[in-house]
Image (cartoon, rainbow, N blue to C red; front, side):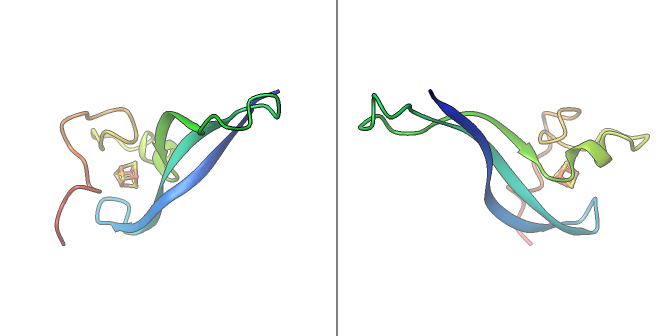
Length: 76
Ligand code: SF4
């Protein structure tokens, strides 16, 4: 049976949240009957996205509320 889990890909300071956050990917690992298949990425999220969605302003693409802004892509 395939296994799904969220894994942290990158940790970075976010100026909007004013703290370290993680960019995470939901990975699907194949069952033991297909051991040569690579893991697949089916979704991305930010570890702080749920809290950011409670702000009164649009946040970023990782919170799902502002697809035109990506704080992980910004240079410090
Ligand atoms: S959801 Fe976006 S704005 Fe909020 S902490 Fe994560 S990267 Fe920063």
